[in-house]
Image (cartoon, rainbow, N blue to C red):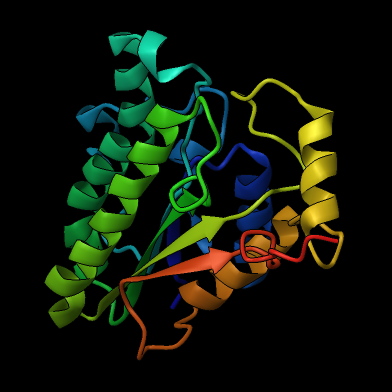
Amino acid sequence: MTKTAVVVGATGNIGKAVCQILREAGYAIDPTWLGAERPDATQKESYLNLPPKIDFALYLAGINHISKAEILSDEDWDKVHDVNLKGAFLFAKAAFPSLKQAPSSSFVTISSIMVTHPYPNRLAYATAKAGLEAMTRVLAVEWGSYNISTHCLRLGHMNSLMKSTSANPALLAAARQLTPTKQLIEPSSVAKYILWLAEGGCKSISGSVLDFDPAYTINRWPL
């Protein structure tokens, strides 16, 4: 029987890589989120027509807003939290009945090293991702009896910046130098790990927040 996946945020670099590897593994991907006319991830109505059975659900949607905390507007705070956190909540709530219909299913979210290693001017983004991590852990406790596992990937520096982040080549270059491998994360690497989770991963693990980071955040060697 063909497995079904729903990827919210499928049009970004990671989303495209994930969809490709899922298709290669034989998954049918809900087309709702694949094109330019995709619905608004922050609206409850966008999740009314999910597939009746979902084997794998991934919430990738996210935006950043760079601003000093003292001048961060209410509107920008709300927008960042709506996309990064509220949308994930709405998706989880709507997907739950369909996730229960699969013999064993997975729900995955994407966080950021900004939660534990914050940079300045990213208050809204870091706090929204922190809430996302907490949500993922709570759902593991609530959904475990239905054989639904939840996982959160706390991503380090990708080899390209988010579309909502102003390009700063110096930042990526500096991060690369502080990474022991001198390599930043490729979307294909994230996609491969996500496929492993979708296929069952380690069923002894649920509610985990994984530092998907090649030791950048723990490298304290000063030379």
